[in-house]
Length: 69
Ligand SMILES: [Cu+2]
Image (cartoon, rainbow, N blue to C red):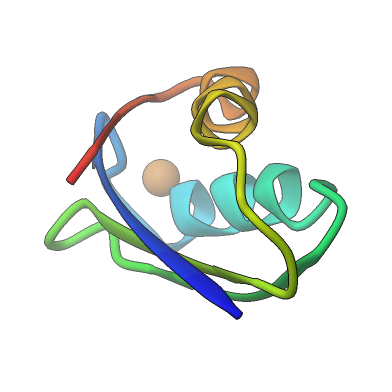
């Protein structure tokens, strides 16, 4: 189990959290997602090695930008 943390900018509400969650959940192996619009924190747990680029691309797809924390 790998857990990676990211800092997301641009989220303002629960709807934003849902958009990010929906995109990130499509990455193979992702088991758990914690996301907070308030802090911008995104924590992704995965059953296999998690590719940062895939997570950053998923957040981008949702309309926000992220960096590895
Ligand atoms: Cu929002």
